[in-house]
View (cartoon, one colour):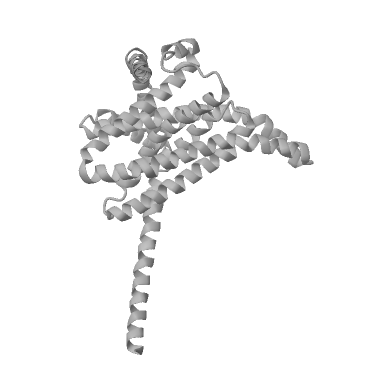
Length: 327
């Protein structure tokens, strides 16, 4: 009896060691995958706050929560199983899907830039896409839906980067790590967004109830947050163009059109060699700017295509669906 018990305890200890090693592997691989996706995470955090600008303070956190739930749904319910299935059965489909996502981000970012330059023309080119919302609830729903659509593209890039760093892992380990990365990144991004959008309310409370330096800090927050949010919205727009351009560049290289990628790389390396003390930072900046410029050019080229082809087709499709429902 005692021998059997000791053998059982030995087995338990051995299984515990295996489980601990597996947990260590999961933690290490999760950290590695999350680090590789950090660039897109920054873009996600910069893009999201612009969808909350313009709402009353009582609706800001609920809107952030709605977008966060949509982001988790995007990552875990839709993208994670699709990514694993595509890698297993149709790896050739991943690149074109990412390319479509890159084109979408480039178009969205370029449209925002176009709207800043010529607002009347920008509003006019897609006037037939959707009716103008007439009440606050409809406006909020449309803004949340737009944020979740944009998040879907950024989340797809995050999940693709995560999956690419897990080539040697089993499918179950890949699924676990991708889920952990999805939850961790979503919590970090939308936690930061919630802090950003409520910072002015916190500043107002400090200004009213605090004294001395705390009150002065609160007044500074109240005065500074509108400017900060507008700046962050601009950064978010630039991030959409940058990420979209980067996806387009890498997708083209995967199809054998390596010219843009080589040109940006060579330019970045040359700039880095000119400033060896900060070569890494300079190369990153030049790469981001090069990808952003390409994304902006592609996005501007897509604006008339969307306005003259995609929007009319969508309008026709929606009218057809509406007519079919009424019959």
